[in-house]
Length: 213
Image 1 (tube, one colour):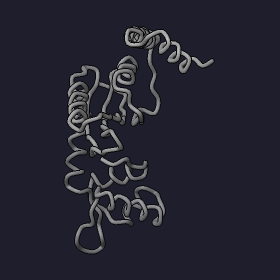
Image 2: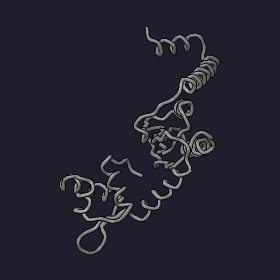
Image 3: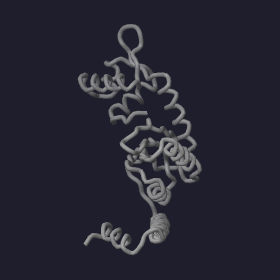
Image 4: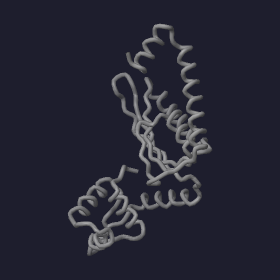
């Protein structure tokens, strides 16, 4: 699903309950007609809503969108995780088949993570850029705790992260310590791996870039 503004999310929630006219939405959402009209036009363009036949004109969520929201709501009811995120994972490869395999591997790996709950995962169209092929995964998920968040960031390297909810998130000192211990071990393992691949000159250049002069 497309990235929505806060107002578009409110409009979507309103229309999920029942179709409505502009006047009805203005009244319930407490917004002006010009602002509402602009958002509705954008949502129509994105294919998220539709105009119903008849007068006065009523707007409704498209059937597929409504079904998807209901599906996600069903997942949310059973989901114990409190931290909900929307992330983008960018992927590149020198061959299209390799890129497709990477997309498939990452998709399967995310699905096996016991501390993640996947709400939606949508691969973007594959694009050829010079010598490389690129795509990205648009993922809507929740994570169990801060430790799980650290794992997500380190192993999957999202280039964009949006916190959907909650507005505030508290974690204990023990949770923080567990996450930092895991993170330190991940960095240590990565450093060992890089060290085995590089000669002394390459290592000096690498550390120079990381730590500066």
